[in-house]
Length: 186
Image 1 (cartoon, rainbow, N blue to C red):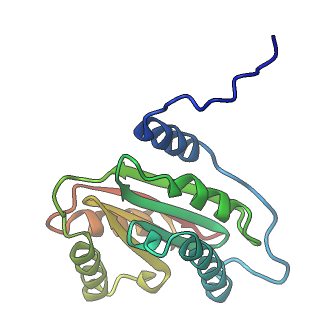
Image 2 (cartoon, rainbow, N blue to C red):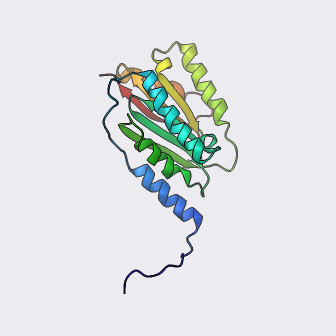
Image 3 (cartoon, rainbow, N blue to C red):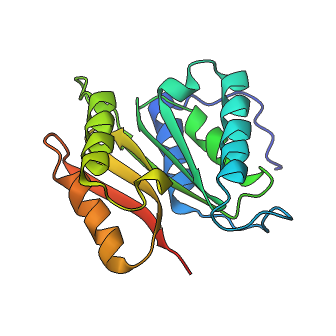
């Protein structure tokens, strides 16, 4: 007998969302870079992020209040503290993967905490701490805080510089952990 069932079997929304998050979190994607773009091209990064964010807003105007999109040298990080029934995360990954110039997509998703963690305020504290230190490369480091975890995206001259950026972010009161996507400059 062929696969003939036409009725929809009930699937709890949390199970579908969890499966989507797991699949999205497990995969990276590689493609070729945009012609004429060089590593460190902030304008190309800005265009890439703007394209992805615009596509997400067209699908759901509130998407960017839940998801952070960070772009650096063809690497796109999509991060967020998500409710259990949030289904836009896999779509965000798909949009990023199919955006011109994106070489790799990584995700950092965590369940949304019951109480507000003040992530926006923590993001600003990290930016301020890095600026006060005069840490080289702060301009080239993007920061988002997701449920108390600092997500860093950028480039560093060497391993010691990358470690310093991670340690500085982790030292901010209220940060539980740091997820680093800092890449070393060639």
